[in-house]
Length: 117
Image 1 (cartoon, rainbow, N blue to C red):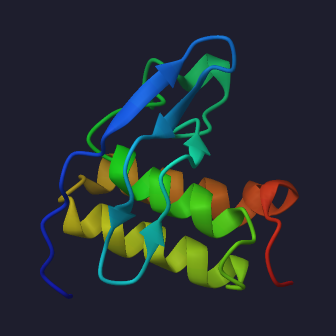
Image 2 (cartoon, one colour):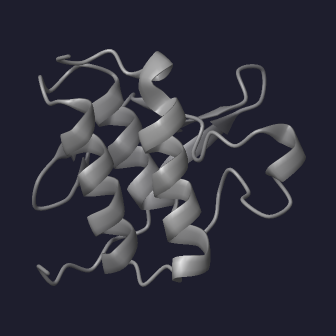
């Protein structure tokens, strides 16, 4: 696994849209998410948000995943989901969070994916 230290994202919350907007580019070894991109963090069903909140230590991985799902990079869904798993490992997110979250996007994230099929 590639060693990488995530910097805290520079975001502002937009309450009317219930999203966060990047104020500066957000860079990882694989992806640069441009300033202005909007993300909701972890897309978690309301009933599970106490266990898996929108914003948590895994927020940087969610930003990258949401950007890859936006269709801007030309990646596949599998590539986006694999990078989510890798980034959550890099962030040292416990398997208790990581495994169900990655499984959920693999199983149910297809309707939100706008990239290469």
